[in-house]
Image (cartoon, rainbow, N blue to C red; front, side, top):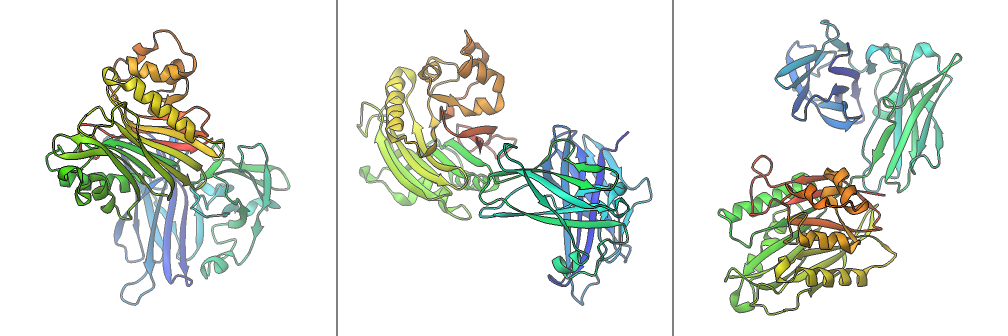
Length: 500
């Protein structure tokens, strides 16, 4: 029976280029639960045992994940380097503990030896990175083969368009690989019989790259295709957060504004749509210093681009409105009343803000932050005016149009049915979390579909225009007691997108 945790490779390099010793470990674990702890228990030549926490690297499939651990030690006279290292892997989950300790003997890797591949795997991707940085045009590939294979060549088979076109890159075997990359004394092949091959893929501005590896020997061709899933490297997805701020009605309001800013940073959100943004009324003149969208923005590690406007007097003390925060520059913005009333003293006066944002690798997006009235107070007219405005702003250059925010219509209600029947916008949180129900409602149009949403009490949505070149891959409820804490009378929703 396979272990629940398995070492793939360990690396021990003393490099003069960065003047440090690096220890790193790649392993895969069986995905038994979301809440898990993975670490490396190790000791250097001084015999003192340490614990090095591993972090999630990427998902292989529903059952397996990669985890990675790395530590560096500077070349200083005050403390000796770890040198030769003995280690084991530990996995704690669901109250149980699992080990990969080389059948009770522990693993060991010598100082400055390069790579140790576990179980003498004949072919292994040892340079696997799962993300492409902004602006990155070249992807390095590092492959280990077993010396006894007497490999004739190693090839990377890759695609940037989901295998519509396949490219081949032939790897090179350089005897001075470790010296060239790290100024290390490790040999290639090393004492563990590992030969290192490498190639560089010219990926330009591709959003996603998939690849698999082949090794040609005299007898056969070996493959490493990531357990049949191929390796995938891609840019970061687009993250959109919506939240109604409750117009300064919260206890510990200032602390909650800080908590919202922390969540935006922790979740690495790209675009934030806020409703019930409040600033002091001040005889209708407002008070920018008290604007809650401004305060949240100023508390981000790096402030975003901010678009905001107000609609009406809220709770007798505030100019109440909506806002958009964008990590990326806003190329165009506007604000309009979508309600019949524009009376600042009427709660039924509803203004929407729009920001046009160009997101790297995604393209140009039109994003609307909306807070519409209830069905009986004019929702249909307001949504119709919003749709028309969004249609007027539409062009072939756009990747997507999003209508975001608090629509004051429960999922499955008459107002929600009005959106569905428009046949133009679709609920992305539902698409990501309940694809079967989504298809029943927005694609098959099955009868009595609203019954499937009886237990869904959302009134906040990200509606995506049909034909948009985006795909929702996840939807998360953010501000709960279990996650980022309650900050409003709304929960806030995060929807994550990939390009089509």
